[in-house]
Image 1: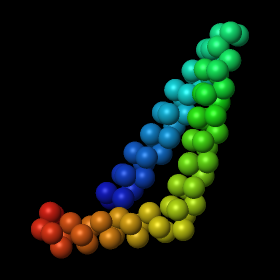
Image 2: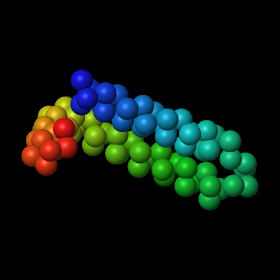
Image 3: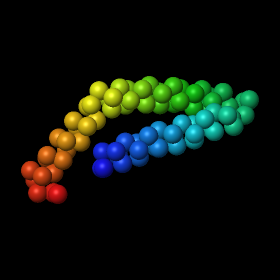
Length: 79
């Protein structure tokens, strides 16, 4: 359950950041070219990060990382 919950949390985080950046981009004034450009670039970067994250999850790397983290916690008595 923990890896699924982590995945949901991270998916929600991407969605929240995307909404916030979209709002910044959408509400800039005509004179705020630099701010609008930064928000647009951040949205593009977020899209790339989200795509890479989805590739990692679908390729099982996310699950493998969670298994390794769990094994490390067990090894060091943190469970």
